[in-house]
Length: 389
Ligand code: PMP
Image 1 (cartoon, rainbow, N blue to C red):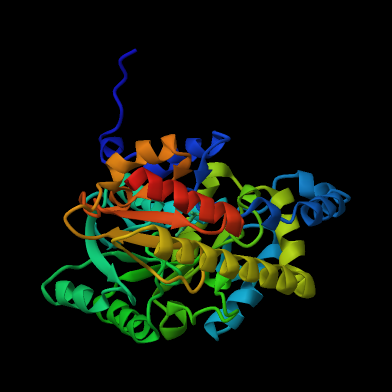
Image 2 (cartoon, protein in one colour):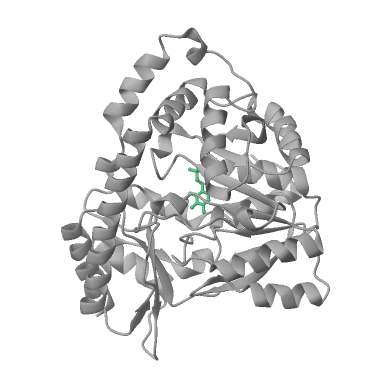
């Protein structure tokens, strides 16, 4: 059937990563492609208990407030107040269907077609898709070992660029694995004040610092910041619970847009999330377990990369889920061409080009250390090494 689709849609690139997730369904493939928490890190028994308790109240099976159930907004507000060092109230929080929906609603609330926005390069693909769908004019600023090159952003701003928003994964970057330095965070918040843009601080990984100390958010340095949080990486992606906090006019606009998008999120998974986040001893112990497992896995993966893969530079993770690889030299493989061979050999990764705003990173790749235990990670790297020879 021939169907005329919107011109906006033609600007939206498909997500190579979501396509690649089909790899994880093949039993023989060790897929380091998706950012999937380990199966044994998902607190299924605790979720089932919380669900049973929540369902004793019929409200858990009903529609709820568009902005989310009050008890969850309160617990998120308490966490956020502690993180940013300023009071945040339940009324400042909008609960969304994953932080991906928060990104979409923020983009739709702020942007008209053609409005300039800044993203990191390499970029979180889900953000790029949302911004493209909103018809934004996307400008890319590189990321180095200390995160977004805020100095280069400052040059672009001085040269006349006037973005409506700057999207950043400041802590344990997806895909690059790096963390924005505090000095750059302060500078970024200052630029937002000076040039009148909003920083979208997309922070699903901040609590996954190996040393247990989440980086001080960009929002601690200024108030032109929208913070996005998520239960996906610290509890379970299937809850589809995320949230945003930010300036009141923005949260009000987001609420209005969310009404028309899905009326409200799931009262049931919000009640479960609220119970788990509010149970401080349990949540602290759960996070400690996640961090310890991730630290051990990251060490196993990076050690295997160093011994098995020649001619590769890698990031050194201090939290989050990802290691970024750059193959160097004249024999550096094109990672997009390498992928089918790697899958044949039973290992998956995401080629760097998937995260590029304009077709760069041909010799780079993202690998996730969170999904498998150390032995399987070592086996995955051996398979990758075989694919290179
Ligand atoms: N932001 C970033 C940087 C992510 O990596 C992800 C998930 N991979 C999301 C947002 C969306 O996560 P969710 O919708 O599950 O909260």
